[in-house]
Image (cartoon, rainbow, N blue to C red; front, side, top):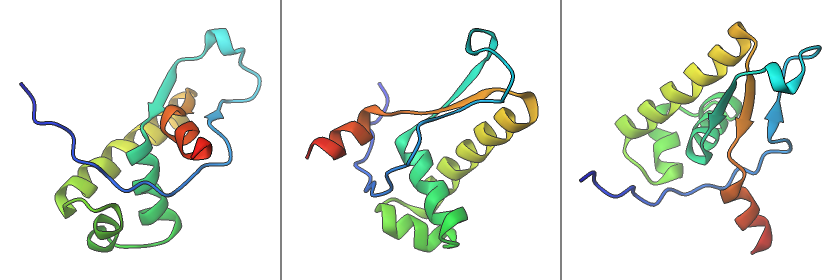
Length: 100
């Protein structure tokens, strides 16, 4: 049985939840799905320019966990850009934030 997922602080709320290549119908696209913690890690590392240590503190997780989450997110983003896939952000968590 896997260890339960630790609570992570998520503050970033994206303006859009879906990106796709222009000119390709939705029914023909493969899709990569970013989890909310992956979006948050990209926000702190790439948009705000924090190093792994500072980003991990902001999310209240360990530095190695932050690095793994960021690596996974960047891999999904690169795959979507290079291979012409759609990129979807998991909305469930962010919808709950808006309701509160």
